[in-house]
Image (cartoon, rainbow, N blue to C red; front, side):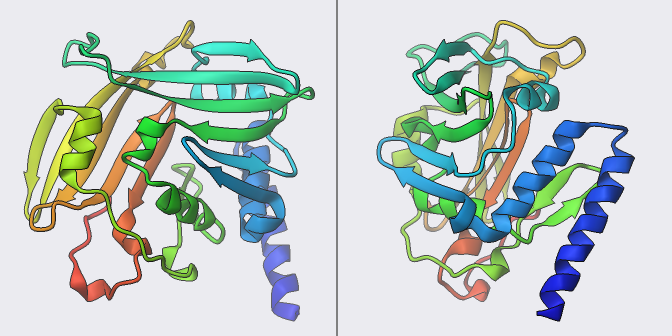
Length: 262
């Protein structure tokens, strides 16, 4: 019990230090509060997976304006709903000149807000799940609880060691390529082939100086021997995501060589 009190006290102290170091950026404070909720995932969140994957926020904290403040980007669509509003971000596959690829390959991410403009649900489309399978996406979100915080870079490094491992087949290269098509570039990295895709966010407005954030470069790593998808890394509307899927598998760590972090 004492350890729990000390841990909570340290978090409060960290929050105060973080608040002072970010020069009044209240949206970072709210983001940190969501991070604290991740330590009790099932109390504050639920997930649903069908064609889409949706993360529900039981105790909403973040406002719609926080996402604009954090990403400097605006959604592709802003539609009213009976509960509030839905923001949809469309990402479309492009070539080296940022021209749309034909036939079109695209995916979306939805943010749903209540009438108080607080985030209540975050959804990902079926195509995104081809590179971030639902079970791995859920366990990656759960691993944020207890994640290491890099205050300078404003990043979280999830702690997969604290989670129960899962038994799940990793997607294989033919199935992924059937969904995404040919990549922009392929890199040889020892035991891995890295397929690089480029997606352009459809948006009606980007804050000046942040135009490069509309372009998402997604790196997908395949094991040369097994053809398994072992890692995905990319930036989506200003949010950087990197998942090493094998860290969550119920197999001995010595059975594979992990990719080095970016």
